[in-house]
Amino acid sequence: MLKTLAMMYVTLAPAIMAGILNMLWCKLHIMKFASVPVDNGRNFSDGRRIFGDNKTWKGIIGYVLFNTVFTVIWGIICSASSLGSLNFFYLDHDNTPAFNILVGVLLGLGYSLFELPNSFLKRRLDITPGKTVTGFKKVFFIFLDQADSLFGCALVVWIFYPIGILLYLAFVLVGAATHLLLNMMLFFMKLRKNMF
Image (cartoon, rainbow, N blue to C red; front, side, top):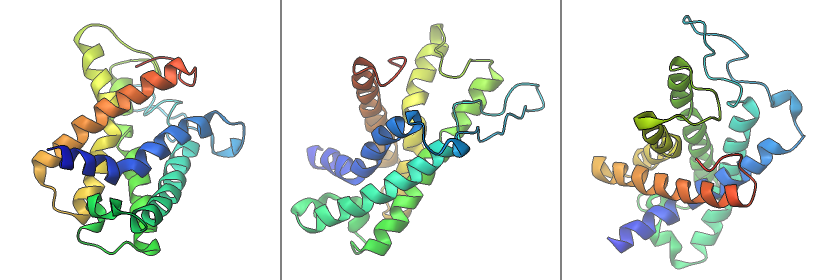
């Protein structure tokens, strides 16, 4: 059990680092041309925004770029240490720069694109971007806000190693709990506007 947990963290360490750096990246006043919403300000048939202002091309670019860079660096670290044997990506595949670039790009896309359905759902329920709600919806969306990107990242792991549905769900739950703790830490460091 502890070894499996360690393997989850070793496998998705680049995605965790990329997620933290991407928050800082999106706050920087560079690449302003990419700070436009993915939905380009368009509304869905219900008259509400498709995704909202918080899902930007800059964010997607950041996720892909940082996941790729960190996956390549992490691959070098794993090959120079015993961490490689704890990384699901290297159980059936060689740890090469080309493979790590592919994995990094897919992790970045999985991370960013799997956030979009959550934003779409929130806009249908008329939840303001970046705001929390009350009651059962609050608990549901606190979980979903932490887990949405993990569904994508865990799927990328499953593409390269047959983890099965139970381990896939474990990746999502452990990742969501980790995401929640990191968000709390970033909130207290004044790098996030709200804790959840």
